[in-house]
Amino acid sequence: MVNGLDKIPKPDQPHSNEPRRILSPGRLLLILLVISVAQYVNTGSVSWLTDSFRWIENTVTGVVNNPGASLEKAGEAIDDIARQAGAKVPGTKPPTYKNNEADISWSAPAYDLSGKVVKIADGDTLTIIDADRVKHKIRLYGIDTPEYDQAHYAAAKSALSLLVSNKAVGIDVKDTDSYGRTVGVVYIDGRNVNLQMVKSGHAWWYKRYAGLNQALREAEEHARAHQLGLWADTDPIAPWDWRRQRR
Image (cartoon, rainbow, N blue to C red; front, side, top):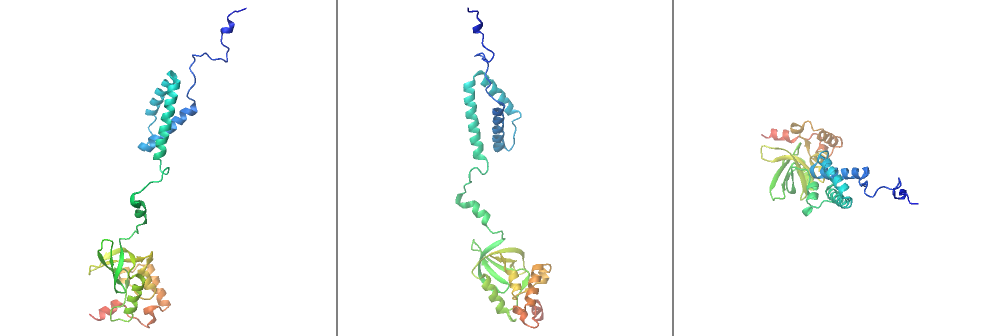
């Protein structure tokens, strides 16, 4: 007997025209996360609290009205945003530089001047030529070496020549003296040449101009204690005293 009850849908069978649940909470969270990353990468801030919710409202409405087409469009949009964000996030793609610009900027020495030593005048004065072919006369800061007519003059000049002649050096500029020379600390391969000259006994610590320099003081004490270079003499005369005596 047909009583019409078989036409009534069972409780576990939804009506065919009932709206389907398209976006799950996880799906919405993923959309918000991708939008936030994209906005941060492109603008430096995340402003989706207003714009994104308005977009989500319109998107959800479209999904309810046309589920198939809206889901496909949303998926494409998410993929596109993810690709753009990934391409712009630092570290996802190694940067390229023209002519190794990055390497050059990072490897350049942090000196005020640099160049090749082309002349040694005496134990504390030299001349360099820089990359622009400009010459600079350098007076080594904080040290003083024997004058031309003093003992150890030749030894001091030779010691400086052995350290830096025809080699590339860097200069930490301190001042310009009354003769127009650049006063500075000379470095070769990271080594302090001024300090080396004092420590090996080929120069005095010039207290008048570098009285607070602890490293130079200790270097001279070392040379004195081991009677190196000019300190092998019983009573060596400092260059500034020698010059004063001959005025």
